[in-house]
Amino acid sequence: MKATYEKRLVWTIVVTLIILVGEVVGGILSNSLALLSDAGHVVTDVFALALSLIAMRLSRRPSDYRATYGYQRIGILAALLNGCSLVVISIFIFLETYHRLLTPPEVDSNLMLFIAVLGLVGNLVMAWILGHKHTDLNVKSAFLHVLGDTISSGGVIIASLVIMFTGWQLADPITSGVVGVVIIFGGGRVIKEALWVFLELSPLDLHAGEISAILCGMAEVMGVHDVHLWSIGHGIPAFSAHVLINDRKISETDTVRKNIEEKLADLGIKHTVLQMECAECENDALYCQIAAGEEPEHHHH
Image 1: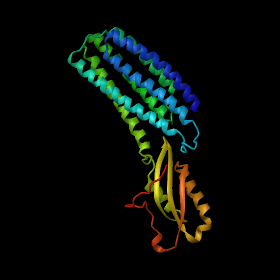
Image 2: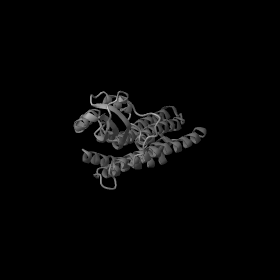
Image 3: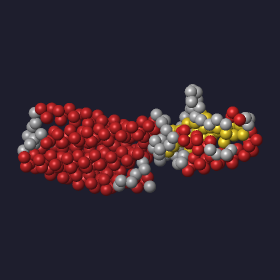
């Protein structure tokens, strides 16, 4: 699966480079900021795709003594850098847009249209190569780049037609501003998803409290505490907890643990660390919670 993703990425990079050269040359010759800002977007694409490719190669490496969790986070790091590069580029586009709105230069709309149509065709080819079904955050961020590009190429085409038929030169910087907004939103999304993993926050679709409640609902379990839920990589949740069971059931610990692991696997959590603890069978021991108000213990991982 990953290998086909890699092939797709390589081809996408080739197509992107061709578009990039065309848009830079076309943008300079036609004096169109919209084309150049689109080219700026394409530069981030090349970065994005190259980073995704490198990250994909690295995250395929099996875990070893140095990276016991594997290398998936390198891919997340790539996505993070990626998102930041998008934000920086859109800031440059906004600045230049501002200057051009004050003093709009003459734009050669025929050349601008021709290059933009080529760009659009190239982007559609890339979107088709990458496909829209992807579980990998890297391929997802790369696909978002290409999607943003396709939208902005469409915008450049519209702007060039407006200039061609009405001579309204402001259409060019306005379009580049819109492209900037598209870029900044895409970047923000990728940054948020990547930081979510780095900050060890619970995966969006899982809730530690609910999981504790599910485990506490099991017959043998008397309590759950010191619960931790985080992501190792994109879509790889991990869970750890201390599980309290009745002293008299100590011989069944293994069965209880297997049952808990099965329940967690149903929720999509395959990576678990469970510490089984015995409790005297007292009535007041039937508490069940993520212990609030305690200092969480520090994990070394």
